[in-house]
Length: 166
Length: 166
DNA sequence: TATTAGTTTCAATTTCTACTGAAATTACGC
DNA sequence: GCGTAATTTCAGTAGAAATTGAAACTAATA
Image (spheres, each protein chain N blue to C red):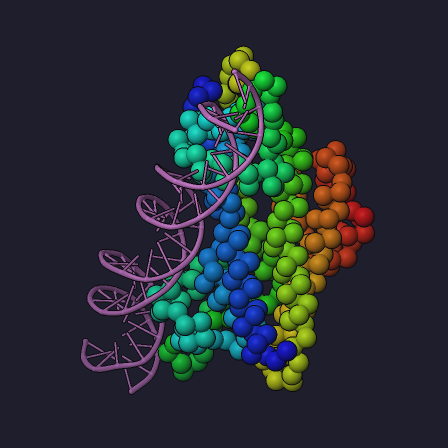
């Protein structure tokens, strides 16, 4: 397979993966493009490669920066901004986990805490209480497991971890 | 908080959580509704509670059954079908992991295998090869970790697991 | 085997999300 | 501080995804 074809397939797959995990296609594709680029790219490069509008490119680049997946790079003497992706995959994974944990898991845990206050002795409220308690337990465990993961280093994950749980 | 308010908030939160993870809101809400229901519900019950159309209810109930999160229940002497959710949270989590692993992680790994065949000695193709290799490594690890998780039992996850990785 | 309660399907429609493009704003280099 | 290249914003729009509703289908029972 040649590089051009590989590149296209990768942009396509990464975009599709993003979509099915609630990350918009363009954001995922810009990320993919920067990941495989050996040099920093300007907004115009991104616009050209992906055939998207300036507004779209700008918004998604900013979102990627928020997520900690992309950095702005300023070249001396150049007026325009360049962008580079974080290339260390372990850092990429940690950023994604951190973001989603904060934006989805933690709010869910807070909601469950509130919901735990539902009282009553009907079968309905008893079943409700049971379900909330169970979900709460698993979410909390997931939360602390991810917290540990995010603080760990890559070698630990890739090496030791697998041996331990096997 | 009373049961009615709790129920509404739970349906709402579970639906929102689903949306941000690429699962449609209605599917998540039907799941939530069945989870907290102490008895099996008919399609009409679901339609009534969530104010959705028959077609929508049917399609999403079927999808939930595909995912292994809901079972059909036939009551003797009753012509209509009833539905119950899998109540064991550990089973719920395993079903979700299994589904998404199969539908997203595994195709991604297959795609990466193909992409690993990109040749060339330009900086572009070398960077490409490096990125693909890294992603492949992490995906494979994630895949086998999840495989192990899915085969494990709940106590192991909740109990031992946490101690081991801490 | 005719009736009908119940389920499934899917074209049309609605709703929601992402994207565009141009105007407004910013800030670099002179 | 001026001119301008570059970035940002956002109302309008396009496109995707979810939903409806009615017709087609299925199967239980009389």
